[in-house]
Length: 355
Ligand SMILES: *[C@@H]1O[C@H](CO)[C@@H](O)[C@H](O)[C@H]1NC(C)=O
Ligand SMILES: *[C@@H]1O[C@H](CO)[C@@H](O)[C@H](O)[C@H]1NC(C)=O
Ligand SMILES: *[C@@H]1O[C@H](CO)[C@@H](O)[C@H](O)[C@H]1NC(C)=O
Ligand SMILES: *[C@@H]1O[C@H](CO)[C@@H](O)[C@H](O)[C@H]1NC(C)=O
Image (tube, rainbow, N blue to C red; front, side):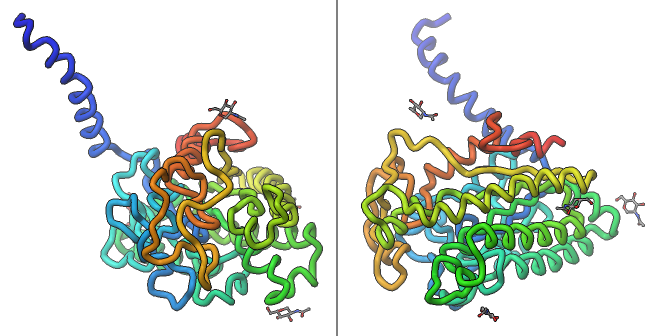
């Protein structure tokens, strides 16, 4: 063997493996045939762009690390669900419902809308948004189209029963409702405990509508610590790392959502529900301030055309409330194959896909 070729040959192996790997990805059959996304700005990938609202981000520096630039995703790069669909083996991200015309809807659609909540009135002071009830109606439109395109009812039903339905919503029912007593009366009507009960009961009804529409695999998310965002700290902070009052709102919500998931698994025996908590290890990351410059009348969002931080991979928060691409990847990895019950219970996403 020519010794001069040897180093080159060895060096080529990783490249070859990488090419083979890409080849595999390109031809991969995803672990589930479809993935539908319901939620708020943590999941929105463009549905708010054409609405009259202050909660849309189709301008730089949003999308600075995303190949297509600003798309309406509320961070510098990919959302949590962008990562999960790639882990599941999908080639493309799910199209936003608002731009689903002519797109491949058989693999799934993203209905999520910034500022939206479980309750219809949530976020109304910010302008147009698509509340969860309306997202569920939009899903009916997509189901009709899928049924038409598949040619028959039972084929569509079988297809829809194998999809994952991701539901990550509720933060705005606190931030853009309960904790704005100047604009909403929920905090005069309910104690934090009662409010969590009311929200989770309504979410339960909404999940059952999806079940009645053929959904059988549900990934339902608890809330993160909404009192620990840079925005919460700057607007309501008292010098402590988190605003306790805000976290005291979200904790009862999670405490009620977890047993609801158990009940739904028990009652709807042909369906699988799992409870996911979007958390991660912040050690080594900047977790107390936002990477971009926030301010103006939109407070928590990046100022248009402002220059963000250079070391974006070291930040938890991109703007005042939304996590970075880096953080989304950490969390997505955790809930995709976590064996920790405090992150995913009773199944991680990978198991949910296989059931
Ligand atoms: C629907 O399609 C499936 C497979 O594509 C086929 O087996 C079934 O007979 C069809 N049913 C009707 C009512 O056309
Ligand atoms: C609270 O506000 C809603 C509208 O957002 C209204 O329908 C309801 O009557 C109000 N309730 C009270 C007790 O003021
Ligand atoms: C589950 O079924 C029990 C018994 O019928 C019922 O009391 C409970 O409300 C149901 N829970 C849900 C979330 O449907
Ligand atoms: C977080 O990560 C750091 C370093 O990567 C590690 O030392 C620490 O034990 C982790 N903490 C938890 C709670 O996993």
